[in-house]
Length: 363
Image (cartoon, rainbow, N blue to C red; front, side, top):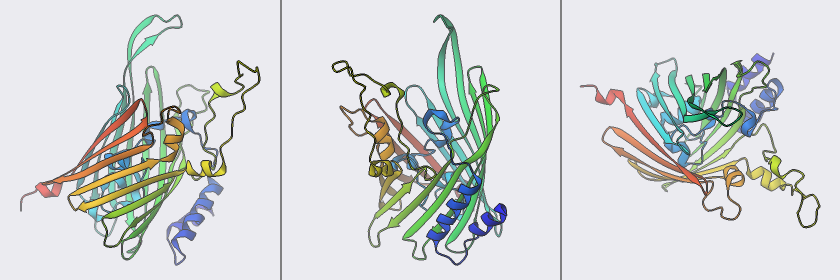
């Protein structure tokens, strides 16, 4: 019965899009445990990193822009359509410290069938010095993680589309190894005038295949995200709102260092002030904006509320949570740059390149 309900929800019948959004969330809540893990308590966290310069520039997670960008469709498979045909994308991010990660992806459209994608995402943690319990240097070890994803997207009609990703994940952390399989489900809506679009993503439904150790409680970073995008008529501005991790209301993180902390002057336990409901709500919000100055040049800005709340340095918050970027088309190449500030200590630089292989074919 559950399978039939999911199928009926994703066929997008005559009911309004928002009703379908809430119906899908309700159904998934009935069949998927919502005790998802957060922060460092879930494994394979690298799969939630921004996969492209555009996603990074717009705050980290954009799921509702439908304009033929394969980088967005690799995350949101219901965006896959004929406009992604023969696109090849390369992404690289010089992450914090000596960590780096990247993505390569390709899509192909088959008439009267679907549009399919394949991608590989990796992260390298660089060389790490191994030490024994006494601190003796045991030499360097390397660590990395990989995700291979197969996606498919299909239009139901001129306004609605659905899609899914199947993801195979491998993790190698020095002498420890783990693997998992996961599924993404997504749906998108685009208005007839194309000025408004929306999307729902249910990501990382899955289970570990192999754990780092036999008795470990290892889970995947499950999440439900809702995105809305509005393009202003006769204006170069496009605004996006993403509400992430809707499966759980309270996303606040309590640092164990501050639990039962004693004031050295009074000797009393320092009370930890709980965030207001408004502050908790804002932790779900990511804002993004694009200035579409021409078909060949875009400027982008983003703001991630949870990133700023969790990572800013209290005495000097600076631009934590703020991101920006640009897009430039040069001949047959589309180049993107994105810069995201995590905290006062560091920012990341993302570079993306997109080409359409058919553009290089003769006559």
